[in-house]
Length: 129
View 1 (cartoon, rainbow, N blue to C red):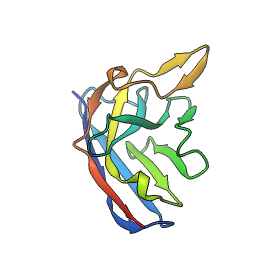
View 2 (cartoon, helix red, strand yellow; view 1 turned 90 degrees about the vertical axis):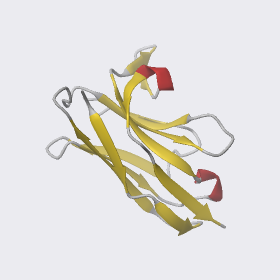
View 3 (spheres, rainbow, N blue to C red; view 1 turned 60 degrees about the horizontal axis):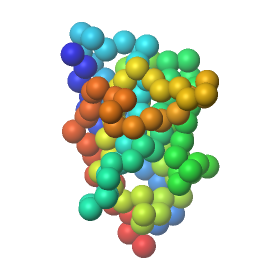
View 4 (tube, rainbow, N blue to C red; view 1 turned 135 degrees about the vertical axis):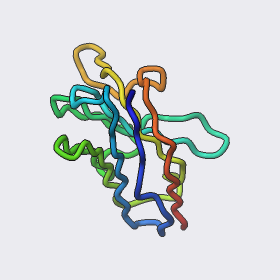
């Protein structure tokens, strides 16, 4: 069993920053998992934002490249997402997920929802213009 809890959501103005955290726990959790952030805006499908593999490889959606940074502190079992230069279109519920890691053509990618077996409850991010 893997338990994921997100923290750090909130409301900010465009151009602002937020840092999301995801605390992982449970008897089945270990640092070999690949971790990811997904988000879902009202009326839209859930989309992958960023992922990090156990070897430190990272992947980002084109829409957040250069603005968001994913990191993990294995000593604390905590995943982070530093979000800078936020835009109104970043408004969504953000979810933390754990899975086995996805590689395509030997390149680490975020993958889809079905590639991740464990999910947090989500934290809301609202960016106003």
